[in-house]
Each structure stands twice: as structure tokens, then as C-alpha cells.
Length: 166
Image 1: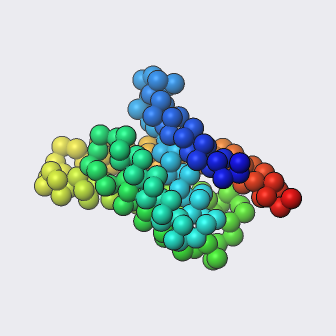
Image 2: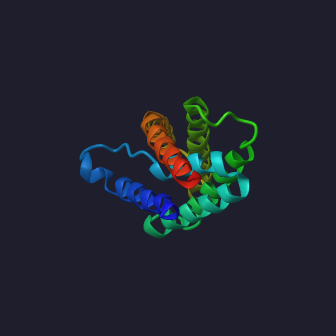
Image 3: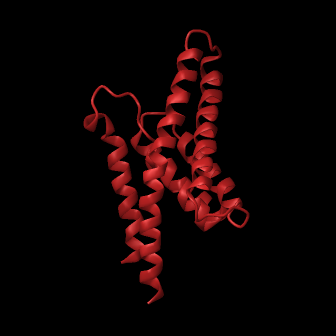
């Protein structure tokens, strides 16, 4: 049963992320719930599992999103790997570490996307200011959502640890 909790929660986050516009019409700011989940999972599972989990989440996002296929796989796997590498060096039981990791991961994703756009379009004129403003909003929304997300993920993790200890 406990092995199904995280996948079911992941599906819940996926449905929340894809239906965000229906829940809040007229709002162009969508938190990246799946990225926040990859960050949390990588903090507690290490680099190999974090990268594998990030790649699986990225595959689901790439299959469902009309973007460049492979972008989410690569970025989520790299986020999972590098945050997982810090598993033994960062105090994981506080929200500040998660908050910092969410900020770094969000900036990494947007910088990677910017590089991909520059390669594809070969020009930045006309859209760079809008992209920069969108990046600030993306970072801001992810950071705002990261606190309640941390609390929910911590509760689920603590509940699963207690349940598995019996």
C-alpha cells in the first residue's frame, strides 16, 4: 500500500498542474508541481534514484505536453541527480533547504529552456524581456507554492515512515 502513495500523489499533482488554468481562469502563472515533487524526492533518495525518478516524471510531462520532446526528461533527471548528490551534505528536515533547492531547480529549468529557445530561434530580439519577466514569475510562483508543498510532502513522508516501522 505504501508503495502506491507516491505514484497516486504524483498523478494528483499532474492533474492539478494540467488543470490549473481551469481552476484559476485568466491566470498565466502555473506552478511546476512536478518539479517541486522531483526536488523533494531527490533530497531524500539520493542521486541515482533522484535522476531516475526525475527522468520518469519528465517522460510523463514530455508525453503530455506539446513541447520539445526530451526537454523535461533531461532537465528533471539532471535536477534529480544534482539535488540527490547533496543528500548527505544538507539538513533535509527543514523547509529552508527545500526552498533553496526549488529556487535553484526553477532557475536551472528556465535557463535551460532559454538556451534551447536561442538555439532554435537563433535570435533573442523581441521576446527576451517577456521571457525574463516570465522567468521571474515562474520562480516566484514556485517559491510560494513550495512551502505548502513541503508541509504536505513532509506529512506524507512522516506518515509512511511511521507506517513502515511497524
